[in-house]
Length: 337
Image (cartoon, rainbow, N blue to C red; front, side, top):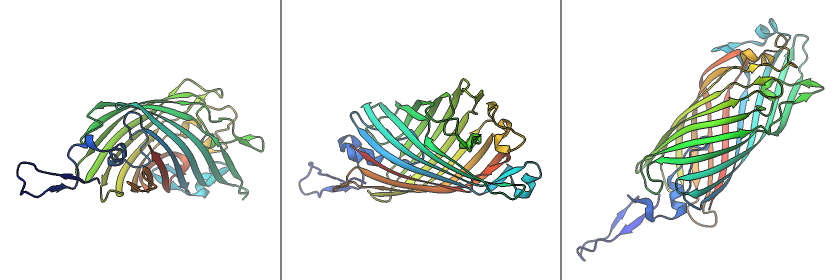
């Protein structure tokens, strides 16, 4: 929270007036402006920069799944094994993401995201075996433009940002273990060029900032294995309290929905494993997430930001039986200059 000292020159005997926050941010430094606009770490494509500004960042995402669901109902291992010769008992999903942002103008910020993914899934078979499957490697690289279409990026208030991006099919769709192709959920990419359209609303007051975002992933074409992952839709809304110039907690609701796979990988037998069934890969989930955001406004660490956000689903509806999410967390660091 920046402070400025304002002198009233109308009468020399009147004291200077101190405002806790400026009404007009145009006189602030680039670093101060960047600090004023804080959004939760997991909201992709919501943070913009002023002309000539750069940002480099890293985020770590972890998701834990310890149960199977069919619809909104939990399903036991025994129930799954009565229908399939194998069931999943747990799965973890980790992602390391490098980010670069650059603003060629006040109204346009460009960003690139390079993910490295690490998936582990544990199984249980009817004969009691407990095989473990894993895959890791480069995911699909993303590029996005953030276009300020409403509001002044140099002034406090409300803004509307258009998100226009795409993904490059750099992630493998041929992950296997012991010569056997792994589940759709253990593949590292989509195998298609995908579009990332969206719209982000940002607002702020003296003590609060808030926003909302709708973001989609639209699949284009069919990959080399004769299938197309389902489109994905995401709707987030959040608010954050500006406690101090270096700290702000946040709360967010995050809705995800995804469609079934079109086509099917001929290497996967849907009668053996529910995660092999292309017609049972859709679902929806609503997450409640709490965040802590730290910023260094001065000193040797000036321009650095550290954020953490974690939470649990408060609603899930999974086409299954398939793995449901138990909890998730994101850690992020960035440096703006």
